[in-house]
Image (cartoon, rainbow, N blue to C red; front, side):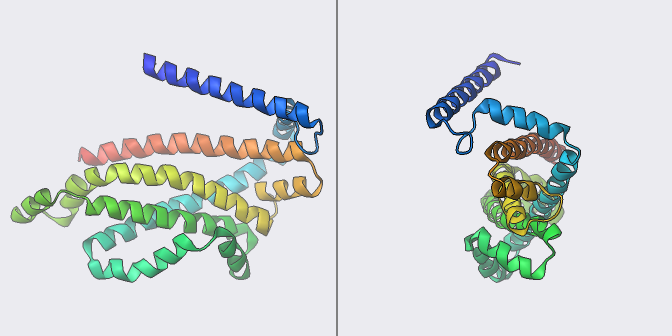
Length: 253
């Protein structure tokens, strides 16, 4: 690990420690665990969650569905963006649908979708809906920013659309795609968990959050929130590293 990375990790550790101290001070000032439990209370409850029989099942239930929605949104968002980049009529046709999806509040979608879908599949669809426009608009912007001179040269040498995609569009779009994925990952978890809290599918993290709220168990509510953050951050790190590896391999083809 080089000096810059060590400095970054040290800064982040100091920042987290400061946040925990501030949290502890606020909990002491409030003096009521029901309103604001201390970091120690949440840590103890978090340890208890790990030992519970249904913990892994609940975590896996939500993880699989939210990640599935994210991957579906990433795949279709990229595909539709490529179609729109190559075809102006397609871009015009997609525009009202994508704009509506981007603009409508997630709570409205969740309530509407509860009429159409079973609660167990709700988080997949909601995560997909939130990720799809983020990826679409970013990838489309990246493809539109491709160097016109390179594209003209490709036309001159009769380069196939597939080669233009890999050797011209992909390098230009990569920063936009990485930014879209970084943003969409956080959005997918927020939207997916919100869908579960409203839909309350059996065996989900959302159900556990709802139960903690009903029984006024603030420590458990925050402990499950920590679990969500851990799952989200770990998946983001692994996915972004894998995506960069795949993109680098594609550019070497």
